[in-house]
Structures are given as structure tokens and as C-alpha cells.
Image 1 (cartoon, each protein chain N blue to C red):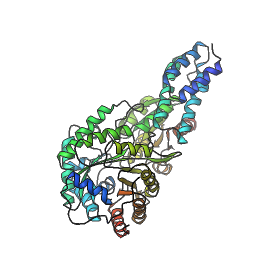
Image 2: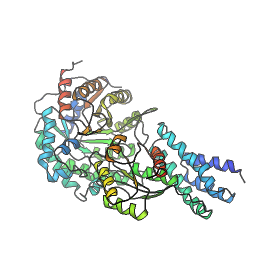
Image 3: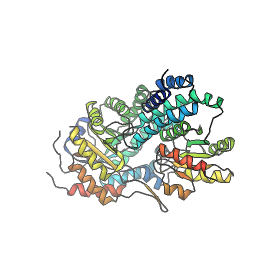
Image 4: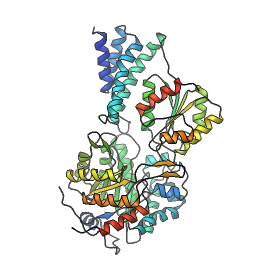
Length: 216
Length: 313
């Protein structure tokens, strides 16, 4: 049996390389070797996805590499999550509803943010693209969401993000709002009263952490 | 390597109708001015947010025609039909499912009406929105099927050439070129690149030089870049393209990055700066220049004046 540290390092490498088959084999090996699921996630998977994000920000990785890493991470999480629950350590960072706003069918950025949030321990409900305001509000209410993330890739649809902030407020929901997408910006978020903005998927994770940690 | 072509841009005398081969000849000997952005003009004319611009080919053909006419009067040699999102998958998502032939045919008719005989009509083809693995699950065959339907409709309605734009995945761009080539019309193939650490790449990681070379090898009559960056950045892209391919090169930059202001959406690049950069692009080897997001008839008019004033070498 390999050393625990070797398994964890191999997991990190497999996530970084987007090798979802190897990741699953290694995650199973880690469980069989008696490694705690949380340790496996935090010391094996997370450094891999974090490094992939850094490589993306540095311009070394592109969307296919980043998505492959995220998918490898997700495959391992699916295996580890039941074990995590059994250990009673299912640490959930927060509940998130995510979608691309009504009238906008751009899916990539939003899906990436959703995957990275899930990989980092958020419980994520991805509503897809072209999501009407009413559905954002209904899902946020249903799940008692901590955070609603809305993506808009068109200058014609970004106004919908403003509508969403108002609709959640009128519904009396506590969820914070994070916006993203090419035309959005920190200034735009401030102007429409959204609590968070991220200009890429990796940054979105840290913004989400900050938003769920702060008091409403 | 190509030598710099730098001729008077146009004879304003009517040059339509042209045969595909006459047009191929023009593409090789002249600097041609394309049009600028369409979406922002339609929004200014009242296009509701969330509404796909393609709807207006059916609902407000007069307003689409007025937008084209703005570019024709500004001096465009070629205008793009209002069909960037008129492939079947995009139309489906826009609530126009099953109406590909109708939307594209109307768009060509509208553009032709605005163009008269002085300006040519490029059938505009954008990405399908379907993503290939590993990012999505689409197949190249699905993409080809979608392009076949749209390009067939543009061709049947009388487009003078096919302009494939804003492609971010080389595999999808090649699928579009292959299908468009089958019409016999001249094909312009343009992808969208960003400046990254090791050069210019698409979001999928396709590098500019090899991508454009692949498109030219696949039979595109002209290759180039559009969108994503402002005109000053695109000058560098044209230089790199010029070193990599012998096919005619196109360039259609944005008017900078959009900024939200209390007065609405603002693009920073003025018509004068834009015109200066377009001339720099022609000097760097481009022979097809125009604008993308945020550019207006004012930008094109300014470019027309600058290009016409540039010295013949």
C-alpha cells in the first residue's frame, strides 16, 4: 500500500491533469487506506483544482484544461461525498443557486463557476441558462439559499441582473447576490446593489466564501 | 508570406452583381472596408433587452435596413447580414426554432435592399453555441448540420459571400468553413483571440498562427480575427497573422471594452483612434478591415476617410 502522502500527491496531479479515471481510482485507494475523506479532499483534490485555476489565470491553461480538471474533481467528489457524510464531516459551506439570466443562453462561464463552487464544498443548484427571475426567486426560497449567482454575457441582458437583486429583495429573501459575465464589473455590481462580483471562476469561489461568511 | 497590398480601396461605381470568382479577385487585390457593430445600433433603435436581434428581421425589417444603410452611407464595401445568431441551435434558444431558412432569407433581402449596387452582402455566420468535448458534448457532425442549414439559406437568398465570425474553437470554425466552401461562394473565416502569456489564443487554447493557417488550408478565401479586443491590440494580431499565412487577412476589432456609466453603455475608442488603428492594420498586412462590438457608422465613416487618404504603395 502506497504512503498516504503519495496517494494525496498523485490525486493532486490527476486533478491538475484532468484525468478523471485515475482520480476515481486514487480516491477509492485513499478510502481503502483509511484516509479521512475530508483530508483526501482538502489535501489531495483541492490543491489540484486550485493550481489548475492559477494556471488558467496565468494563461497556461485554457478552458478545456480547466473544465477537465473541474470534471475530475467532481468525479472524485461524487465518490467521496457519501463517505464524508458517514464520517459526519459533511462540511457544507453554503447553499448556492446559480444560472444565466433570462434571454441569455451563454452557459460556459456559469457552469464553470458552479462546478468550482461545488468542488470547493458549496451545495450548488445549477438552473442552467435563460433562467427567468421567478425561477431564481423560487429556488432561492425553496433551498433557503445563502447565495444567488447570476451570469450575463450580453450587454442586452445584463440589466436582468439588476432586476434579480430587486426581485429577491421584494421576496424578502436573505440570499446575497453575486454577478458575473463579460459586461459586468465591480462598479456594475455596486450600482445594482449586488453584494459580490467576480471576473473569473476562480475568483468567484473566494468571493462566495467571503459572502457566506459575512453577516447579512 | 504575402507582400503588402495597398491599393485604392474601391471604385464607388456599382460592382454588384459579381460572380464568386470576380469577388475572389477583388479580395486579393484591394483593401475592402467592412461594416461595424449591429447589436448596439438595434438596441439604440429600440431592441428590447433579452430579445435576439434576429427577431427584427421578421418584426422590424425597416429598422434593420436603416442600420445597414448607415454603414452603406458611411462607405462600407461589404455589410454583414443580421444573422450572427441565425443557426438552428441559436434560433431555437431565441424562440425562433424551425425558422432558419425564413430568418436568413429575410436578412439577405433586407441587406440587399440597403446595399444597392455599391456594396456587397456577406452572410454572417456565428458560433452555434454548441460546445465540443471536453467542455460540452456536441459532435462535429451536429455543428456541420447546423451550419449546412444556415449557410444553405444564406446562399439560396443571394448572399455574395459567407463571413464566419467570432469562432473560439478551431474545430467548429473548420466545420463551418467546410460547409460554407461547398456553396462555391467566397468564404471569410474569422476567430476571436485574446492576448495571453504566450501569445494570442482563443478561450479554448487555439493559437492564432496555426488556427489561421488551418483555416486557409481548409480553403477559406480570407482569414482573420474579430471581437474580444480593441483596435490597438488587434494591430499586433494582424502582424502575427501576416507572418503566418499567405491568405488575405481580415481584422474587425471592438471599440474597446464596454463600460457601464449612468448614461448607459460606453465604448471608449473614438472614431478617429479606430480609423488610425485600421490604417495601421492595413499597413501590417490586413486587406479586410471593419469593426465589431461598439463600432458605429461614425467609426466606419472615419475609417473610410483615413483609408482613402492613405498613400498607394
